[in-house]
Length: 141
Length: 176
Image (cartoon, rainbow over all chains, first blue to last red):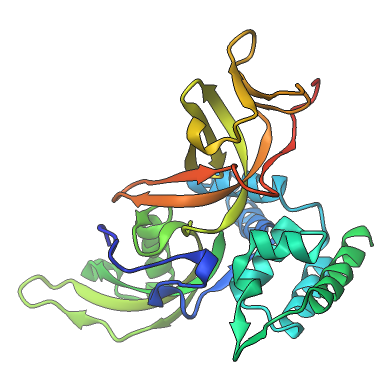
């Protein structure tokens, strides 16, 4: 703990994450708010005097504000669609949070979506758009 | 961005806790030691979501206390350079504005605000677009890209930009 290994190159726009996050799974705001509020509610039930620490309270407030008011089932479906589409954990959560409407917007906000794989783009605009449209359907449901 | 991650920590326990409630005591101790802390490597540790394997305790010579290695899963908040997130503007001045994403503080300098925005100090300080349709002021929600992070032992601070396509104000406070 303490000092950060600042020399370790990290850049989410280029898909470079430190090794400590290899096994981590990114959470969308909706998923995080559901998970954290469950824990807080349970602790409050066990001990009515329980107060979440300031960090937790702020995070929960933030995650709720930007969760898009989706149900847990919708969050799960969105995740399934995006994971099936081959997105990394960071990209899944980013798309779920930012809800880009067009493939162009998605690629600008999350540049790793534009990366190439063996000279072939990972996603053509059409294939990415299909995924985004599918996610947008759940948004309205 | 928030992550669910598995971490490990060594906990030191006094002999008076060695008993049937050992696991419970360890969990309480774990929560009080790690929740709310911050490290450069993992970011803010927001909340312990569960405790996994507890290793065999080893007695420390000459002390009688025991060290337990415990694995736990937790939610962490860790900003990365390059990622795009939504934040709430907290204060505006002529050199730029501050925004919050939960416990995370970000600063957006006026060099990283599009040129057609001008600072306006009359009334609520704000950066206002030339056509006066968009105001960056306290309470507004903005989408920004993190361009740099600085991690201290107890704090994370980020610098962001809204001078790119698809970034900027996404919703203004009510009454605008």
